[in-house]
Length: 328
Length: 278
Image 1 (cartoon, one colour):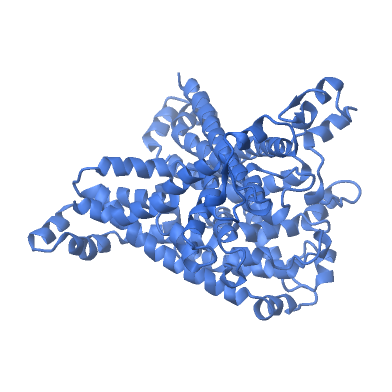
Image 2 (cartoon, chains in turn orange, purple; image 1 turned 60 degrees about the vertical axis):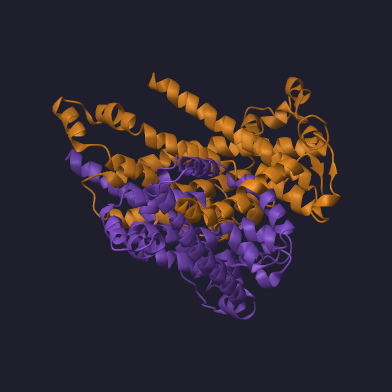
């Protein structure tokens, strides 16, 4: 009995602000509700919210498709970059010969603990037309670089296609659509604006993941490494045959947290671009906010949330499958 | 020889990375002292040529920044104290007490851990609206007063403590709550500090909750939300008041930065503790 007494306040909190609300929101996703009027005044609409997003062509569907496309490129760009860079930094910091580790660890981790809005503001400033990014690029590249990074809606893949002379959709790609978006539009890549936000995301998350890798590296028994050394293994062999396999659990954790985190990007989008330019930084998390709180379509916002939830489960499931297969 | 080269490359990588991670903060700080025209003329220079305190007086004297700071402090302190108490109480019950339903509750906590926060935007708004807590401090505090990660961290921490002291206290006639309050909590100090830091940092930086709960009531705005409105008059990037935006950003970062430098080792522990949850 005492056990129940001890957990009941916490359970009440979790139940009231997590479990019950999620069930309630699932119910709302099958209703038409503005979010302003009392909840009782909402009307049942069956699966219409899901239908609008997934089946019926129109701006609701194409906005949702764009948000999925943008966030897909965001995940595919940010997760590998943050994982690889964090791992490399962890390996360097872990090197026994180097001094000043505490300082470097602190410096790399610091951006991770700061306010997302403050960091977003700092990046707006760094990437401003007359900011340091353009100044440094101008110093390295011929001519003056004056890109307005956060207002540039061209997709980076479209830009690359352009280098090879493909400037508009070949008819095979332009005529066929998926979720109301042509295949050519699906293949745009992240816009320049979104790429800038991706740089920010990598910059702020490397520190956290580096600390996780560092904890993993320090758990590797030293005698194992020494045994490999005595057996005549080269540095490279020791890295690929001893270190890397032993780091698989940490790698798994970092990838899972990375995927879950990148599918929820919101604060930076709100503060930096509000989904623009040309909806190329629209993400599902931002769309939930826009539909629910500025377009007064709370039922639709709830439906988006549950589709995203399902997507996150699918993505982490795929990643789990890939890593498991390698183990066999 | 090979070792020297490796060491040199190691240091080079570390120094270059440290520059990439820290220079934006240095440059931002110096920019807050630059007049507006100098910001675009000298985008790289880490000190002002014509120092000006205009941005700081704008932020501190001519905006609601002090009010937002006060609100953030109230919300952060209340949410953190509640979280320490409720999470440790629940963690202790799950780790130590024998009761029916214990494994069921642990399962629930683990299930809640798996819910991505993005799914919570609409549900949180719904329930706070139904309870009449929109535009109140309670609406900002209560949803953050318990969290599954914290319960999990405390459960793990209590599982690692020796049982003997508690048993001695029980034999001496202390009741269960007294044992928890006077014997167990003092032993759990490192775990509590870790949790307090995680909670402080998370609540202080929280943006989405104030956005959906107190957007309509500017007297309840907290720092990150207030900050998001600072220096952004007019449309388009050209009219952003960078010194003001950056001064606000630096002040928002400062409290967490101080705690971070002083209590570093507990931050690292929080990461590892959080890491176990995967």
